[in-house]
Image (tube, rainbow, N blue to C red):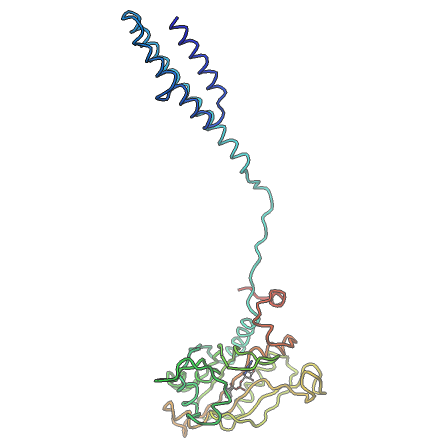
Length: 348
Ligand code: FA5
């Protein structure tokens, strides 16, 4: 009778195990048959009600069934785990034959491209490209450039001040401070260009940004003259804007050069006839330049009787506007991909 009960228990347990298909169902089954309050524990409890002769055989049979069901449980557990893994692999399957999604490549900003082009032109003319600080001491931005405190020309550069009590620190309004820093560091002959960011407290419009990029050019040696300046800038303009470009120099004033000039090229839209781009003049001014002022040479310890030099300063955004026919300078820094992706010829 008791043995019949155990046989029934075995059949029920085996049936339940065969139909357990998930780990949850398996742990329910384990609790029901092998757990502390499970059917086999109940069966063991019946030992007390049996006679002394029946007990050993029944105890042995219960233990054998426990071992048998434990082994069956482990085997079933393996099968269920394997089936679950197969199901997960089937749903997560990657089709390695599908074509990949192409990565969108970034491109260099048009101003960065132009900086590289200008550096390359000047490299072929024997100029080294260097960089300098954007946060600058007013000594380098003004004083050493022959613009002492209270000089009216200081207002021309609408300067953003960072600190002004013990020491005047500014966001550089032009790259000309690098004339002084370079000459302090190097002995003549000097031939450098210095591209970099500049900042001015400006009213913004189609040709004025509060943040823009300039390139400074500086050459110092014995016997340098305006002719060298003129030849270098004409070559630069023709390489950038085409070999047929005419160039024009006119007097201009900058405290750190003497004489000072503005440099223009003939309008590439109307070829000098006069149009909206050149405001009817036939010429487009692209930079300021001149012979380095003797005071600036003296400030860095160069002998102005022995050395002469020339310098120029040019805005990259205005160059790019001319080169690419862009009518509003603000387009460069609005991060509009529709605008920027037009300049995707260089990616490295
Ligand atoms: C200067 O900054 C002088 N340091 C240039 C110079 C260097 C003269 C060496 C002589 C010798 P100016 O303020 O004109 O000059 O600026 C030079 C160029 O910077 C301008 O022709 C223009 O292209 C660009 N620029 C000036 N202000 C702005 C602005 N707000 N937005 C965009 N470009 C500007």
